[in-house]
Length: 151
Image (cartoon, rainbow, N blue to C red; front, side, top):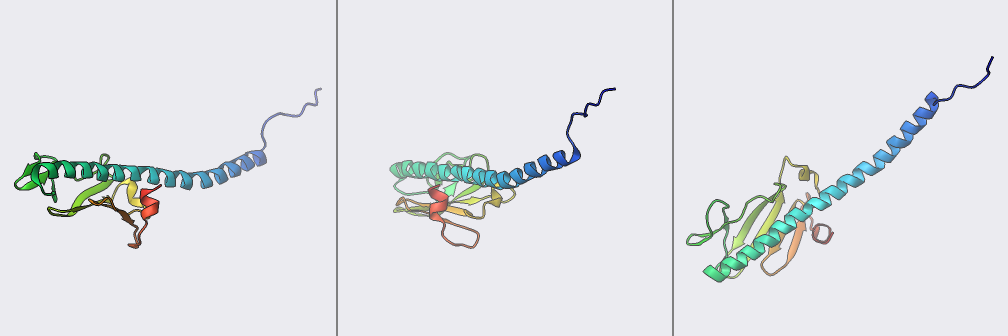
């Protein structure tokens, strides 16, 4: 008769492993989610900077800036229209020119509802002015420039 002890995992050992895994996941998932939201803000910044280049190109042709963005029409001086998408590349942000004339323009990228980016409470809207001034606002309408533009 052999008196060997059975080898394997006990229920307690499995519960300890499951608890440790759960603890690690509870720390890692929110951190990862925050990283993804910050990474997606790059899409808004890229769209606004591309719009800035398009506005300056239009200004060289028409001596004014456009308030109308229309990806389906060619850029034109009369009426002043800029061929530019009103949504960012993956659709996380709505792009708009909120003010424009012969001297300056203001553009915004507002997070789109119903997308993964709608959970980004820190950067509801990013704004870029023709002067190069960058600003941002959170859900409480508090300025969050550093968080949204510099990170």
